[in-house]
Amino acid sequence: MPAGFEVFDQFGNKKIDGTDRIPRFLGIFFFPAGAAGTITIDGLLTGAPFFSATPHGSALGFGANNETVPSIIFDGNLMHFSSFLCDQRIIVWVY
Image 1: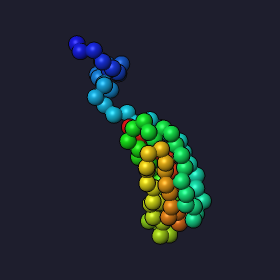
Image 2: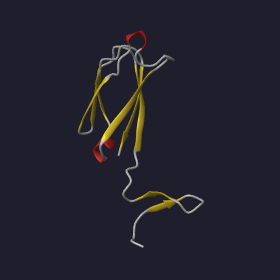
Image 3: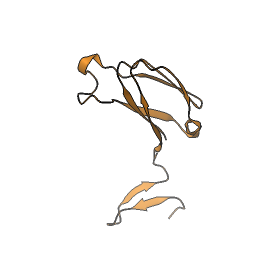
Image 4: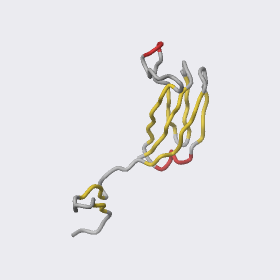
């Protein structure tokens, strides 16, 4: 068996190994409607960043009441954000 990282379930099935990409959570950020700016997140430098966005306080989600996905751009250790039409919850990860 080659050396490396492997995780098995209780039945002996391999679930994760060294070839899998496992995301690392960097944080949850809350922004009010109309917010725009830049946040420094040093963890962004440790992998390929991605995010999810949820209209905060809106049970209907995107598409309801003309809600749109906010503009998020990652540049080095910076997260630039804008175009929030409503309060937003942004979750950031890297893999």
